[in-house]
Length: 270
Length: 339
Ligand SMILES: Cc1cc2nc3c(=O)[nH]c(=O)nc-3n(C[C@H](O)[C@H](O)[C@H](O)COP(=O)(O)OP(=O)(O)OC[C@H]3O[C@@H](n4cnc5c(N)ncnc54)[C@H](O)[C@@H]3O)c2cc1C
Ligand SMILES: Nc1ncnc2c1ncn2[C@@H]1O[C@H](COP(=O)(O)O)[C@@H](O)[C@H]1O
Image 1: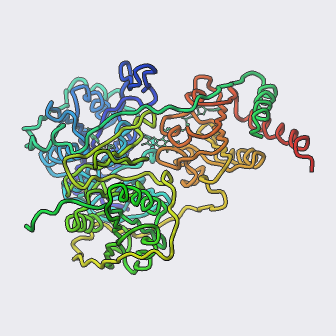
Image 2 (image 1 turned 120 degrees about the vertical axis):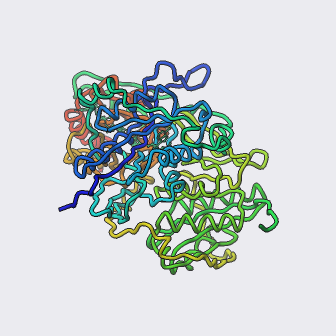
Image 3 (image 1 turned 90 degrees about the horizontal axis):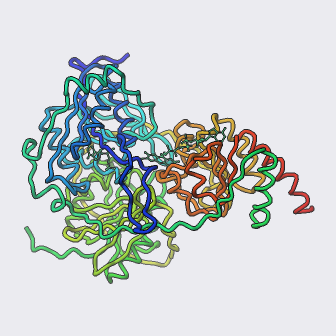
């Protein structure tokens, strides 16, 4: 049996709001990405990170803070996190942060974490669906000088000792380390809970969202935003996928299969 | 501080796992060679481990000019913190202008840690590289493969990138190729060990039915409802002379082993025929199979995204369609190949 931590676990989960990947389209004429009208959501693997943290909180007690860096509309994501059970939501928002690549993003999030106090675990998702780098978690571990465990699917904590299972290409690894640490959570490792009605009311009425700006957390202005980002996007090229014939059949199974196989035979596929 | 040396050369992190250099690293030696030759500079490798000297020789045979060999008991198995510390020291000592790692899970978490200490730029999961006015253009799929972003790092050095495995061809091994092995002395102590791997649970790898080599892939998604359905998909695969694979959802549910996952975080495949069964066609899945020669989709939702990239398809219940396909293919077979 596991021993509860004396004061419970202090945890922070970093969440980002992202455009729904499935809805993004390329403008056929301008060949640019169409973002207008695209809904946003919490980055999918961040939901798994939230769920993992909430399960630890259910078991050991403690507190869970959701932290996001971005424009004011990211409040939506924080409200969802509170609805799911996070105690508080913090938005780090500043124009000076605009255009940050992963280096300033992990720096700024780390400074925000330090500003907010001491934590036992900093959680991130495995990667975001919009920038898909997975660098922010390890980058925060480097900035905070903490151990990191990435692509974690299960975690167990006992007397300040951490035992976690991570998914790698050729299997699973079990790792041991101590608190505090940074964890990135593997997409799909659990079933994120839905926000509860009570949680939603809490998010809306009590106004648990706190705003921080660059000065509040003591960010060095040279290290953030476009000027603090070593990488630049030189250009975006749209991918020309091969034209597909798109012969789709429906109706009675036997007949549909016959037509499909006729096509495949005609094309020499079978 | 010593006189500033102009960054020069290309360095590849040689990822070593248990008893072999990982494929992604070998492929990257080939691509690193190409880049180094365009720039007219040397290609070096960083090999960390314990008792791994013979792999340094192997790495040279794939195309390196030299290997920085760092051996220490603490480095025997990969761990982010000590590996990151060693890589920072190597890069600061030799000042490569380009630093490449395979975009494996360890390559990504290692790169994602040590580039912070170097305060430079890191592009993730690149699928192509170009040189533009002596700078590296790091090309990577964005938005699930709908576009390609050309990323550059002009102000800081090294220009760092991780590169997606199985995109670059494996270079030929030349047993006669000679290079220098430079033994590096880097101090490591117990204080550098902040986490320990205590157990490894291996997946079964089936080399005989490697996805990368398959002409026909029959892939199942969450729509197949249970692991057992893969039995039926295997029958279809057998009838078509192919092998089975799946979406990340079926892998997460443990209905299929991880090495059979197709997509952005799984394998990238390009078979002659890809049959997507009960797969919705999420961008992350499409990223791994959209360049297949012919795509066949079977899904009961006519609105499923997967139909948008399908050459052929059937809207219907897979539990009816797939057995019917197997039956009719077998029926046609004798007529086509009389034996
Ligand atoms: C960071 C990240 C990385 C990811 N990497 C990958 C990756 O590498 N590979 C990958 O595949 N996914 C990946 N995903 C997940 C991806 O976003 C989707 O969730 C996943 O691909 C969906 O799997 P699916 O199509 O099997 O399941 P679903 O989306 O649940 O689709 C099931 C489909 O089956 C159909 N269906 C149901 N019943 C039947 C029936 N009786 N007959 C016919 N059709 C039926 C449904 O209409 C539906 O279209 C990643 C996600 C993230 C966030
Ligand atoms: N702007 C952000 N605000 C909060 N968390 C973030 C932000 N960007 C990235 N993260 C966290 O870092 C993880 C990896 O993101 P990335 O490196 O962008 O793929 C995400 O899953 C989040 O947990």
